Length: 438
Ligand SMILES: [Ca+2]
Ligand SMILES: [Ca+2]
Ligand SMILES: [Ca+2]
Image (tube, rainbow, N blue to C red; front, side, top):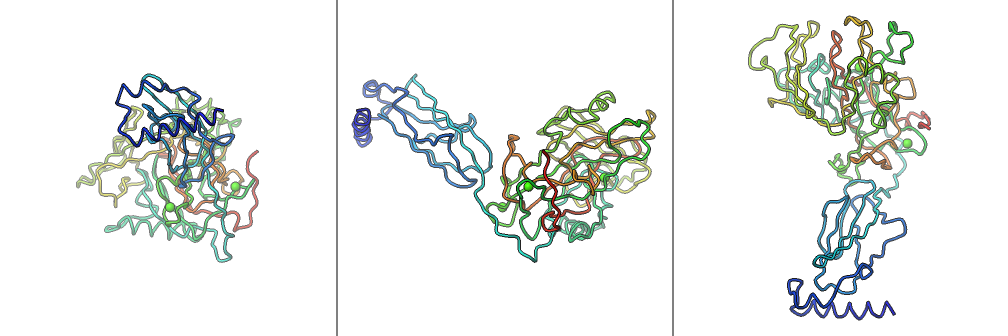
């Protein structure tokens, strides 16, 4: 009975569509009054499932479209005003889709969940694939005492020649150290194959130079020393264009992403007056210092390079007496450098109380240059990747890795917290089986 009514009304609505009536015509639109049950969407149980970059088409069945407008909202933001929705999702994750049907002052919302993932099945990794970095796509360290040194900048160097120097250092298992400088400094690397995300296993390791301090005055302290965490982003080349597109990046959610208060040194850092917030949309800008305008700077210099962040903080990066070269990347031509990302709690504490013994404490897991390379927690499970909303996504594998320094902190005479890297290893090609965390 209901079906017959719907068919009849639909025919009427179509007839109306062919003639001259419109929703602007008050005489005609008052004949039909929209009711909630007049709109139907054939949604699967548990919501829609779709793959990244594939078309989701949602058709609406209605009794009568007279004076009725349709609006589609994704997580509350309008994405379409057509009756039938056609939409492609650029990022994996879970979304709330709302259909809003409106007639005059009458409005009904219909809510659906859309789960966006990947349906790709990776071909087996070929026998000739190497476990190590084979490409460097970008490299921009932030201000730091080893910037322009690791690797060395020489007059005339360009972004391209610096990328090549980084590849010569950390590519192909050479294991020569590079620095990312202070917060935000980054490198983007690629491989000759896709690093597979194997179920239940960690998949790759980024090598750093983290070590534990041998003589912490606080003998009860948790593990720490020189832990200078870099945050990892991963990209699966879903569109197969050989490049990491903006929408293809996901961040590895390490322990402080999950809950910074669980770090074993958290209370100590609070007591030391550290900034222990974990900022999700942090942004910092460093301003080129005067030495680039022909004024040599004689260290030490407390007010060397000015910085500002988007949390209302600002200050200067210092130049120390041990490293006298410019700390601002010399092949970069602009007057200021801006970096964005997650900013981790400050993990450095002066354990001597007089500025002589700094300990940079270890985060529990999920970062680079944070755990000794031989320990399991230096390795990463691709399953820890999250989208910009912090939702877990299940990538089939990873073609590109970006690493950026995750802490903005100066630690007295030892200088800024700066992530160092010597390479990346595909654990599956090396035959290392490291179970993921519980
Ligand atoms: Ca895995
Ligand atoms: Ca791509
Ligand atoms: Ca380091």
